[in-house]
Each structure stands twice: as structure tokens, then as C-alpha cells.
Image 1 (cartoon, rainbow, N blue to C red):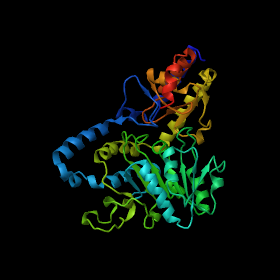
Image 2 (cartoon, rainbow, N blue to C red):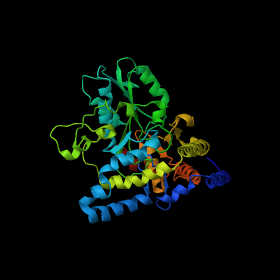
Image 3 (spheres, rainbow, N blue to C red):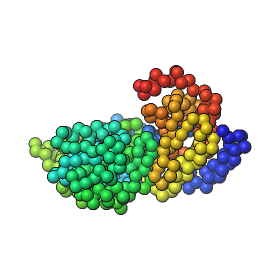
Image 4 (cartoon, rainbow, N blue to C red):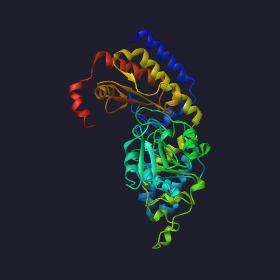
Length: 416
């Protein structure tokens, strides 16, 4: 534990870091509840003020006012590709290589089939056993004719599972529990050297670090927009497909929005040229309009500065935890090296769920993952260095005072 003098010095240092922060101007562009330190942006980002205005405009003027004319006058039909072009620089892609549509799960299914369509003579898919479950559900649904190899089950290292039989490698840039960060260029090069296609899941990295898809020569990628891109609950996801693959790639969900001539209403399906072939049905326009403002903020922020602040925030958090709370039952679950850590820090505690509930009750919002993981996300556009200090101080108080009620929360944790 640390004394009051330690915390006063820590706050003074954090104040100085915030005063010199080039990203500080972005915080006021989000609506954050008073008195809350929000460290759960890796699950759901807060609402940008501009998104709330865009929703009101879309509902009251475009939908209620102009009605069906808004498909043209407000540019509704082109929103998936227009927003895709906003996502593109955030993940290191070019215009015309990203489309915003559907959900992450649906887009993973599309991307898996698209990758297989590029390697029809191969029947093996490689993924991480510890991946977010929806990735594994999608991979397992490909059918008995394919073999699924899992890192952590069939071999200790992902790269060791990639050989001349592998068609597709599905891999997360940042692990959703530990925050482990993989190098996009290294993994892509290793897989492509064996003739495989790589699909990157960017859900926990897009918006908080450079991704560099084209610099790495990446093939395909998917990601969500409701975390660090602040698009709102259930906001549409995105798909990236390198321009060099777009003429040959095939995805299984044929629908009228993905047709080459959607308003000809032809009986037979002909896929659209370019990235629009990853569309299928009509998209949720109000969600897209809300998302547009969040993407505009992400496109405006310098990703180098964002990543530098992310590292600084997580390093401060880890150092404070190690000094003030390590003897109180928490342990670091995330990598200690910031170069292989995303923008989140995971800790473990035997009563992790109850501890997190006690933190939330005191205004420090993180989240819990089974069996004992406390996750804290650090979104550099609205999290301050003083927030980090106050969060760890609250964690120390919770742990030292044992203010959680383990019996009360244990049964609830089993079903959450």
C-alpha cells in the first residue's frame, strides 16, 4: 500500500502529463457522466456529442422530414462505402478497400468464406483457441470438410501451425482478455510465405494504435466500431479487402445491396465490383449516421500520438498497481512489455467479479471476464492521466478495506 504523500505526488505528476497532452482537446467532444472514470471503452465507447446531434438530424429531418427522398438527398445509400473510406486511414488501408456494414460476426463469416475462395485447393483454417468465441464459432461452422487448427490446442504457437495445407489464418491483433498485441507485418509475412490468406480481427485495436494493413500487405480484416471508434451500441462493423483481391474474392451472403446493379432488380445475382460485393442487405441508417461522427473524430486524431498516450496511460496504471496494490491480491494478466500490449490492462483477483462491482459502485467503470479477470481499457481521446491515478487509488481502497461482498456476487458472477 502507498501513503498519502505517494498519492499526492502521483496526482501532481499526472496533472503535469495532462497539461502537456496534445490530445486533451478531444475529451470535451464526448459526453461522459459526471464523477465517473470510464475504463470500459474497450467494450463500449461513450457517445460523441456530434453523434447525438447527427442522430437527431437523421431522425427528425431526414427520416421524419424528407422520408424516402433521403436515400438520395441525404446520401443514405452510399453510407457504407463513405464510412468505409473514413475507417480506411485508421487501419492503414486505402479508399475503396473498406465497407461498413452488418455485424462483426456476420463479417467474420464473409471474410472466412472470402479467404477460402482465394485458396480453393486448401482445407485447413488456423485460429487462436483463446480468441473471442464468435471468431471460433464462425470458423467451426465452416463444416467437416475443413480442418480447424487452434493455437493452444494443436500447437503452442500460431506460426508453428501454418504450413502448405493452410488456406486461412484468422487472428486478433489484440487479445480481448489479456491485451496481448501481435505484430501485423510479422504474422502476415509468415502466413503468406506458406501461401495462406490472413484475416485480421481488429476489434480491440482499431482506433487506438496504428494497424498498417497495406504496409504489411494484409489480405482481409474485420472489426467493430462500438469500442474505440465510439459508434454506439451495436453500431455496424467493417470489412477490409485488399484491392488486389477484390475481383476474385467471393463471399456467401448474396443480397440486393451487393448486386452489381441493385436497382435493376434482376433475378440472377451478379456481385458488385470492388468492396461493395461484401454488402448483402439494407443497412441500419440511423446507426450509420451516429457512427459517422465517431469515425470523423478517429480520422482527425493522430494515431502516433494516440498510441503514445495509450502506452503512457497503461504504463502509469501498471506501475501504480505494482506499487500500491500488488500485495493486496491482484496480479498482472496482461503482458508487462507495452510493445506487446494493446490499450487495455487486465488484472486477476480471486474475487474479481465482486471487486469490479465495488469499483463500479465507486465510479470506476471497468469490466470482468471469467474466471477472475478485471479488464481496464484506456481510450486516449478521453481518458486522462489523473483518471488513472484516481482509479488505482480507488482499487487500493477497495482491496485494502475489503469492501466487496464476495458471497453476494459469487452466484451472479457464474451467469454473467
